[in-house]
Length: 114
Length: 115
Image (cartoon, rainbow over all chains, first blue to last red):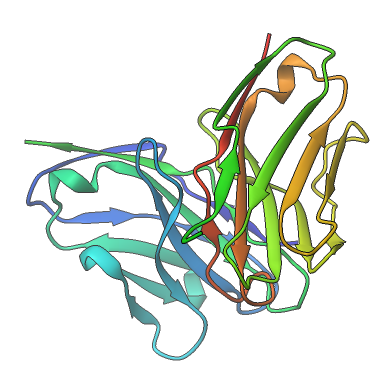
């Protein structure tokens, strides 16, 4: 069965600074990988996803993530953080076999300081 | 509707009571999922429907939890004999394709508090 680890529970970044949120997964083959964001009072929103091909994927709001098979990682990055990026971020993994739902990590809370 | 709709948004009940939570998915989405999110945790998978049938209910914690989707659209999550540990936000999501392959569209959740 697949699993996801987000090692950082809470990260604080200064506005305008770069951001990297870590995600490690466990799965026997190449998984489908996702990053979702959850802002207070709102539902989870998809930022980006990796299925195959180019290992660097671009998402919405200026986010990108890189799939590294050798490290079983899918870290989320943004070159310059805005105050509106403060939210909770979840990495999720999906198995390529049909009938298996997404498994989510425990999340990383991002705070942005001015 | 335009998005996934969940009702009620908040539900407070007493221990031992029965609760129903409703999810109205995006029109045309064949797959529907229920997740549970406790404070400080990520969404935890409960059950997934493809059409009217439960394709995977391995995440349901015990037999007090049950979900239906009789016409392949709206789904109801039913919790019997509620316990304080059932307090959480219950999230519903829908998608077009097979789970794990495409984007899930989430509702804003139903916050359940069991006193």
